[in-house]
Image 1 (cartoon, rainbow, N blue to C red):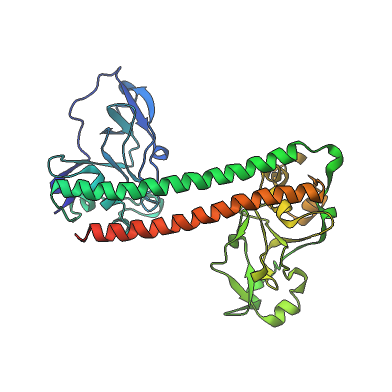
Image 2: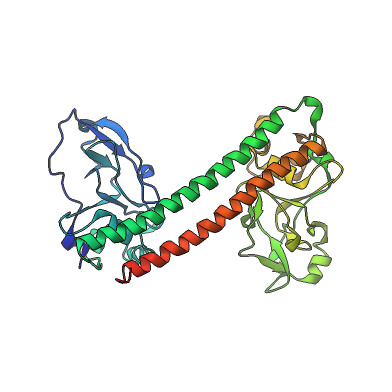
Length: 384
């Protein structure tokens, strides 16, 4: 069954609001990538009646322009008013309620296969490519009886709810870590500050000049900026150096377990501790710091650098100027709060407890993604 046979695409409003009637204004930013929308900003209809896309509460909204469409900005309007007005880059899908369930259609439209096919059908060029209305009108989908659509949608909605709860829990973990760090730092006196360089036995930069000349298909792993996330190393998409290069001209930045690797560009200052599994590896255009174990715990310095204090330090706010390229000299001279090792270890113990909980939630998140994918495949193959 074609979508255009069971839903109206970009329909007019059934009844035009008065110019003073309040409607919900929803920009592109108000359409989430998780299938939800914001309530929208209340505005008189007369202010937004021209040059925008009208829709009703409960309609499906599809971002038609690249890259918003590829980013899955496809959701159901849940707004504060009966009528909404939004971005001109929205396609509106209004299911015919006697034959099609809105939630069922939403889950179908959010499938990867639909987005890939929609991307192939885009028209225009560069950043102005758009999904044509004809693609939506002709989109073929299975259409079981309405009661079956509602049952399927309810199952998929429950999984979405679990995914959203897990995502919120992980966001709270990030905020909790930030709060723990801030509370510890807020109680320190000026006498507890010392230079970052004093906290390290080594502070250097990984190879920056033609590292590709040392690349091999398999060998010693080398970390790049893309591998460094706040508080963890992402070991996907690694590159490799030859053992001879790693032991020779690149040896100054050879990594030890417990070293800090710090981004210089992109997201300057983002920091992670090198795990045991990457000891002996190397770094490309990253600051490498070996903490002095008698002064600073690696995980304390990592937490500090990833905190708001660390971001201010890297941005240059403390020095009255903004840096786009973080350098070793600035970091070596930077004054940072350094409590006693006992206080650092107390902070690290609390952070590790939060991280262990987050790892469990991350595992659950991965399982739920797999469950959702499997249920969707079964649902739209008539097997759920």
